[in-house]
Image (cartoon, rainbow, N blue to C red):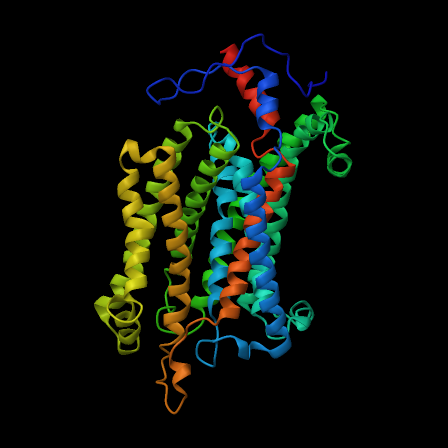
Length: 458
């Protein structure tokens, strides 16, 4: 017995998604409308402008990296003490936001949560693009990238860097599979469309073998379940191992056993914030009000509040105990964060990126699309600067005092090359998501059809 790619059509017409008071009304959708709504859409003028801006940022970043390759790391503001700058901040940020794939796809799917279906592909493409640029930015941070192969030839198992490379590679491949396998049933629908030859060949190459048989669906479901189970420990490992890169380095602010859960809780929060932003953008510009509803924003808002409270707990844990003991090496570091040169950034990240969004989302009106979008932006921006604060202040407060060094060694502010490369990498990740949304359905079509028919039969 075969599953038909297009389920039997219902003779019901779609009703407007919203009633006059702005609240969600009951909607009945035909198969044709679902497919029409969820097929990839061509870019309009605004979309082309968005792509052009992202490409421009990427080109400027590539030019800055060319200068860095030509002249060496001297073009950056990194020196003997601040040897890690916004490149590593970007790396930790990308690794953090990539965990949203395991949160939305794996954890919620394994928990039997079905409302997250429209969000799974959004979260997975965010995860894949983020983890890809996490790997790229590490190579950028290397002074001699042509020696990268030495990591595999002479790498030692005792090194946390080898652990990080291993889990990042594993997480990347699992995330790609979790993105690709659920996409296969939609390929048959895409192949029936009237896309240009180039895109049609891509669809044919990726999914022409998918016939939609009962056996293929059964194998696909089993593979997805296995991947969902496998990605959870890998997701926890990837950010735990990343935290160990810091915790195993004997520095004030990093000498902590709290770093593993501290990093993981922060990663889940920024990932949920990133999905909240993507939900609003795709809902508005792709006209997906029938599929990403007020209910989705309400439930995601509650998840964000829960994750925010968890992350706030680990923040208190991270700073309260060192501040209570106030050991001499920690004193300069903590004073710099709480009242010194990094204080404005630190308190902005704590309040703007965590506490204020949580307060807004505690109220039902705050868990509607536009407030959720603003809270997501605040969380994502605050999370990036929080990663910057994890890296930079610690490096500028070593255990051994700085003596007889140039003034530039005692401070760090990124050069324009660093800013250009960092912004270029962020633009590159957004460009990957944008191009994916142009080529493939950003919401699973086949799963939406099946769920719609299940609702109608219940």
